[in-house]
Amino acid sequence: MRMDRRDFVRRAALLPILGSSLLGASGTASIAATPAFPVPRRNGNRRWRIGYAEGLSFINFAGTLEGIVRGLDRQGWISDTSGMPYVDGQSDTKAMWDWLAARDDQYVEFVPDAHFGGLSSAPAEPIVEQLRAGDLDLMIVMGTVAGQKLATDAHTTPTLVFSATNPVTAGFAKSESDSGRDHVWAHMDLSRTTRQLRLFYETFRFKKLGVVYEDTAGGRGVASIGQVEEVAERLGFTLVRRFVDRPTNTRDPEIMERYYAELSRAWTEIAGEADAVYVTFGQWTPDRFPALARILIDRRVPTFSQSGPEEVERGVLMSIARADFRGIGNFGATTVARVLGGAKPRGLPQVYFDTPTIAWNLEVAQRIGFQVPFNALLAADNIYTKITGFGG
Image 1 (tube, rainbow, N blue to C red):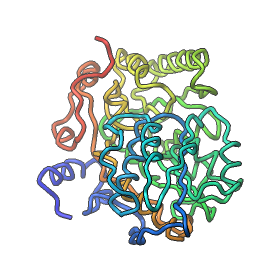
Image 2 (cartoon, rainbow, N blue to C red):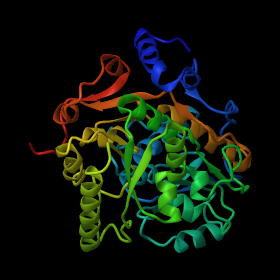
Image 3 (cartoon, helix red, strand yellow):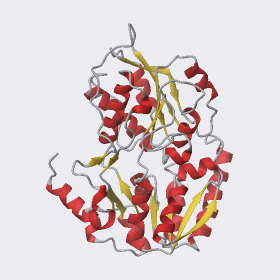
Image 4 (cartoon, one colour):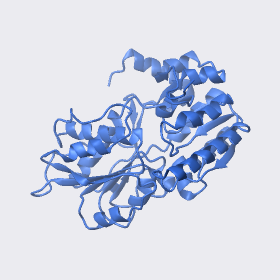
């Protein structure tokens, strides 16, 4: 693949921070080359029945699903997805799924009643029972919590997990190259947290890094705290920790208000002790996030988002960005195709990451008194000049 001038400049600007080993000539990386996808075929005399589950509504989940669907279109498993209801930045997947389920494609069926949302606070048993009954041929799963609940030995339906922080530490994969279960596959980018923290540290050289997360096995897995601790030891900074309980029901206003109050208290406390804050995955809604970010902005604390540029747009200083979801979509679509072609999920490559780029919010930088280096701006694909939803 040829690099255009902008791509070359971005890579050159990133090299001193991220290291040349992370930047492959193709713009993506994986442990093994993904096998060619098979010719589309039906499941005997019927279509392949596909289901979907997610922990909560999230921009990355919707974008990844959109990328997979477009990839399946390019590979011939479905046709003409140009009218699918998706726009950049949306978090809703149900409208997409309903549109897909209403179609009459030749090879695959997106089962109308097999879209399951809210697994962060909903029981998984009804879904597991449906999988155990053999009603579905393949499950697409988004997020760490949904992966923990569905990538299990309770059924044998092929289950592909995307957008999980660290499937190994979360407990539903054995290693980068082996899920540990024949019917399970999990997308891996285990160096993502390391890349993020190294970039953040090289920018600010902090001595104390603040992290807020739920102090349970699941909470530590979602936030990839094991890797955070490893990087802290390697680079020589200490962690300032606060703990909050994840909401048991994100649809309950009283529970969510209690969650926001706990977060506000934790971020206020940590802002007085830490030199910088690593904002780990949370269950806040986009409209509530700017008010939380203000706590750290007002105290002039540099911040880095674990989840990506969507939070940078709403008040975090920086993160590693993804230009779009086409790369992971193609990788995911090829994995789906290989499984439908008869391959065991466990035997397929799991590792993929995009060439990293940086997202910056210049209003956050101005408010905390930080001048973003020129070479960092050259390396950025996402530069926000205002904080969305900040309100002055």
